[in-house]
Length: 166
Image (cartoon, rainbow, N blue to C red; front, side):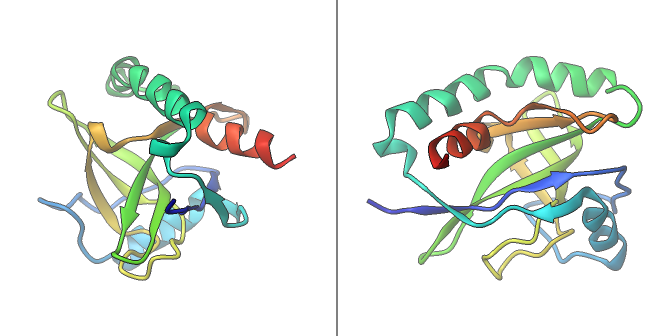
C-alpha cells in the first residue's frame, strides 16, 4: 500500500493571481507567491492519507465530492458572493511521493479546465507556493468554498481524515 501525503492550508482573504499558464504549470512570480500566501493562515500538519483504491470509505467521499463539481463549477462561473473563495484539491506526485494540495481557482472552463494558483506550500519540491496551475476537472478529489465569515463548505476529504485521527 502506498501512502500519500495530504497537506492542507486553510484559506483567508482575497487573492490576486498572475495570468494562468497556457499548459500545465509554470514558475511562480512574486505576485503569485504573495497572493497564495494571503490564502493561508496556517499549515495543517502533514498526515498520511491512504490510497483511495484501497480505502472504500475514502473512495466514496471522493466520488461524492466529484459528483458535486458540475454544480460547484456553475456557482463559480456565475460569481461567488464577495469574499468567498473556491479551492480544489488535486494530487501532485513524483516517482517517490504523492501529495494532495489545494489550488485557488481563478478560472474554470466549460470543457473542464481549471486554472488557479497553488495555495499551500507543498512537500514535493518540484512545485512551489503561488505557482500557477492548470488541472482537469477529473483530477479534482475535493473542493472547498471559504466564505467571507471564515466558515467553509465542502472539504469532505479533510473532514473524513480529521474524524479518523480523533
